[in-house]
Length: 393
Image 1 (cartoon, rainbow, N blue to C red):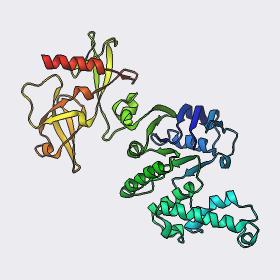
Image 2 (spheres, helix red, strand yellow):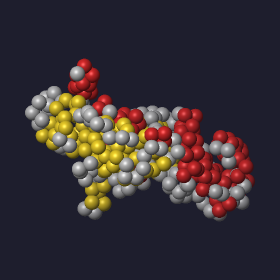
Image 3 (cartoon, rainbow, N blue to C red):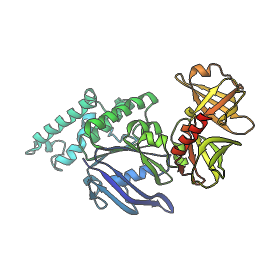
Image 4 (cartoon, rainbow, N blue to C red):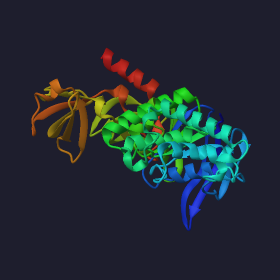
């Protein structure tokens, strides 16, 4: 097993910069996901780690060893591709065995007929067959060993691709959007299998995806990539609760976070839509800020409150999304062009109809505040003091 370190890795194709001074450290045995939109450079970064692309600058270390001049086959990493990359004319057993044959058998011993009779080849092939069977049983595909890829479902092909990586027992597993070709139900099942596989192998996993659900549910840590840069690396919950920048907050979370324009006044209080909210920033310069409010941070009432508080807004229901265990309520804030989305219980949504007026209140302790440059401002202590003042009023 081995950790992976990247220091100042940059890569351009022609005049287009794809990676900009990327630095990160993946611990031995850790499961790290690289998540970001298409074109942000995450797959290119994975290929550089594997040795399939050469960086323009920077350094790649695997297990503490600089591998910039080491060819892919000697880096001891296994890569699982989006397309599975299985050989269609080979059986599952042959696909799984191929990496071991390339490593353990000489060129002559790999010949179809003559190779089987060379001295020493037979016990090596028996050991390869044993290792292939063990991996196939671990992935529940032992009954498929005699089939070819065309006879398998998408999920079965994915397991074979994983098995071909596992059988080598590499130091590092690299996975490039391996579930993107599967249907929704199978993706849920397979990502659970991959997470369990990681716990069983205790190997280092680096997993690339544009699907934030995959990133948040599988990994020990998440690295958010945007515009060729790693913006934040943290645990999934910290990425959600405390995004470092507004663009991270806008990328992570479904539905997308609501963003409201606000202003810090001369006293440090925050004003939103002409009303002062119970949030205060000591030492912050007066000026514009952005407030991020997750869908679950709103509270709804079916009737407009006759005595609204500072954090209460009047709104009209624009659309309802009934999702079974929850309902997403799309709202237009009264007297503005602003639209927001609130998450509520079906019992609350049962009293709502399109066009209905509601009172919308925010839970101040869940509000995220970002400065004009998009950096998150830490308001925890000031927020707590403000809430105590409101409670005592």
